[in-house]
Amino acid sequence: MSRVYNFSAGPAVLPEEVLREAAEEMLDYNGTGMSVMEMSHRSSAFQEIIDTAEKDLRELMGIPDNYKVLFLQGGASQQFAMIPMNLMKNRVADYIVTGQWAKKAYQEAQKYGKANKIASSEDKTFSYIPDLTDLPISPDADYVYICENNTIYGTKYKTLPDTKGKPLVADVSSCFLSEPVDVTKYGIIYGGVQKNIGPAGMVIVIIREDLITEDVLPGTPTMLTYKIHADAGSLYNTPNSYCIYVCGKVFKWLKAMGGLEEMKRRNEEKAKILYDFLDSSSLFRGTVVKKDRSLMNVPFVTGDKEMDAKFVKEATQAGFVNLKGHRTVGGMRASIYNAMPREGVEALVAFMKKFEEENA
Image 1: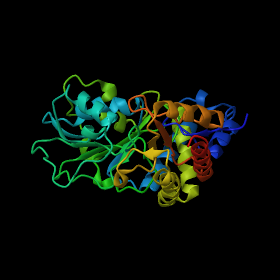
Image 2: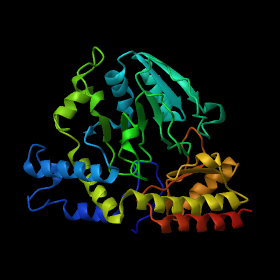
Image 3: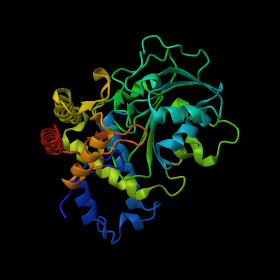
Image 4: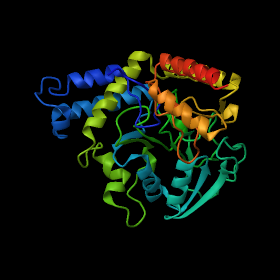
């Protein structure tokens, strides 16, 4: 069977070259006579894999020396608890709620202290990013939290909030490595890897060293303490070793493609093809305020649930899969991550034009 165009929000499309390489090495990695899946995480062969992955990620993002890179399990959702457990010294944190994942993080933080919702776009189904010019930052807040790209609703922060000196914590799961980023603007920048980087089951946390302390909330599990993982080089326990290996291959692929500047250029180009069509279509329309549109996740609707369902069904039959919108919003959503080729977006738009003509 030929490969489909996979528009899934995550687990998502991976670069074909990476998948082929991993397939070739499945039974024998680098002359070891075994798969990375079978390899001891204490072996020199695996130490080289994790060291190289970290080195390449640091180069791609320009991560300064005073930030640690942690490869952790539990996905992004586990960070919703781990962040307040480690950072809430005053038991106060400010949250900007721009989608379901920011909302879940905000709700989780309430278990550990006072979480303040200082801005939200829930009044219009999270279809925009709220005004960030003069936020009511709490004087005693331990950090300010955002979800930078909203996978479900298709919005993206184009500028970061002024946190008035408080550490900024950002979930970048669905825009990770899609464009250059100034790591120094964040206290913590983290993301689940299953959207833009690798297989499901891991989160990468990039954390400033001054935020890694033994002074965590009472009752914080050992496994949820940043210092434990930082001191052990992400090898305190058996890590998600195969995932780290695939992520490492994706980092190499990104470097070979020209790095994050080039990815941003490609991503803008791809997104423009789809948004331009949506803006001119008489059947389909985008759901996000134009200035806040994501380059990664593009939600759209026809305005008729039955027509939406018909489109998803016919698109799937034509080899455009996972276009159904999230259950909380309905409609459609095309996730066009780094590994989605431009041809995939062009082919989708051609199919949408044809569908529009047939259903006018």
